Length: 102
Image 1 (cartoon, helix red, strand yellow):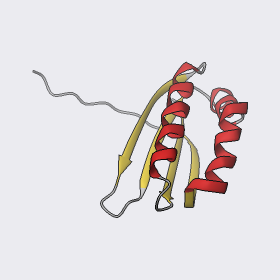
Image 2 (cartoon, helix red, strand yellow):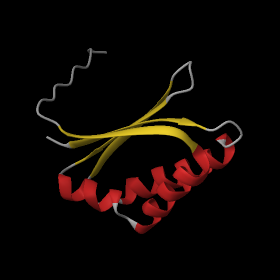
Image 3 (cartoon, helix red, strand yellow):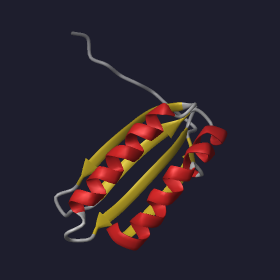
Image 4 (cartoon, helix red, strand yellow):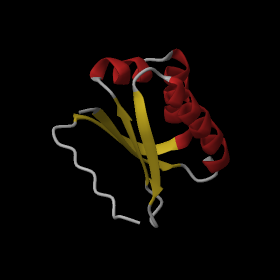
């Protein structure tokens, strides 16, 4: 099982380019963290962004959330990028994968 972080947000008009650069940097950093499993990003038609990040365990997720570069990006997000955001961190209690045969 894993720890899942769901990050929903809306970016301020005009901040998309700068936000995109920081988001790419944080995504690259997350991928280097011990315990990182995967990350997915979605953008709704209404402009809501959803990032789902999975880590192996709570210690790995906490190390990511408290990484100094991530903390700086979080502050910059509050100061410059976000109209709002919502974060949920959840313990995965069930997982099942289906893949159709080729």
